[in-house]
Image 1 (cartoon, rainbow, N blue to C red):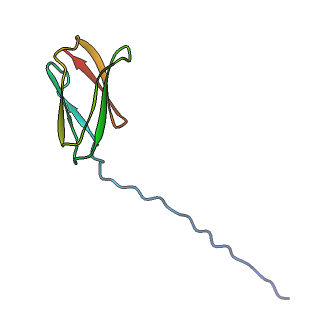
Image 2: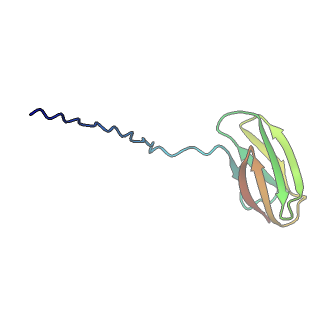
Length: 95
């Protein structure tokens, strides 16, 4: 009597994860804002920003390619604003 046995070998792929925190692509400060809003990026690249009021209206927009860029906001009314920089969104308060 001859018995054939076939064994299967199953291979599982184990995902690997990094434990290093990712660096933020952009930072904006101060918050709350009074006269100017500063956008900072870790490396100089061309960035496009748009600042919206609470109604979704564009109150300021532009591009920059420097490590920091300052937006004058003293003319804006007190309230909440939304800043979008290359798809990254921030909520800021104007005092």
